[in-house]
Image (cartoon, rainbow, N blue to C red; front, side):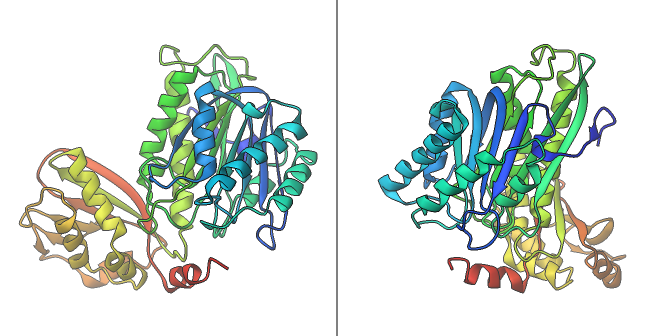
Length: 404
């Protein structure tokens, strides 16, 4: 982490002019399940979304409303994705926005909507309406914890973070909250991610910055190789900090970008570490690839291999499974050139068991809660990094019964 910014408390409401709430509406049966995030003033807004051809109704609503590049509020429900619900699903998403707008006294077009959970079940709108009203009545600048808990589905912990930086000599904050533990391997963002800042930021510049931050973080996470219908990342910038408008020509632009990238990365790591049933956080580093595309293909093949992930869970440094995944990845490959290490312990050199390889040392690496798998293809200068986890018995248990 750079020295130009520091961690602060508050998560998504750490920046000035933001309030949040999270309430229990009975959608989950138990636990908070409706959240609100609200800016005191209209905020510049940007977003990225799932590239899945099957999109939840709320994704389509947000994509349409983000054309304005401005919003005041985001309403979120968990446990129900409101995906594949036909015309009713779209009507319900719009109704969520309308109820929120009425309760807050703002325009309906200023409200964005997100849903997460089970696909194909109609929303319980009576409970959601009551939840939105309760959340609106309890909004506060200390409501970030409740909101972060309300957006959780199979997450075991809430995911929040905030940084403070200096722009134009003024303190500026960036905050965020995210949810996600399963159905994770996106091509745009991941899960639900909400970022906030009190900085004044040019709309087009912020969209570009968010897209880049997402590519370096949430796009590099895989838990199970499945992409959600509802993946959404939204960012609000309300300008209350009073800085000069940030854009690439601003002398402090790099400070802002550094903080945004780190915020996104740290939230992404929290997601990978909390993968459904996960016991280990694993970083996969591909170097020496012939192209960036090849490096990405190789990394995703390793991250998504069930054989590889289950061996990590069992503490078995089975490099044969890793090199097998590399071979079918579609990346250019010369098996006689591949090196594989676990952390700094070499497993194979030039495609064969390294003469100095120690099974005990390799097994010791896998006893840790975090480790890296490092692959050098020796075919070029391109590299790619991804974040994933092991696959345990609990992943099956969680997903064998989630519908209920």
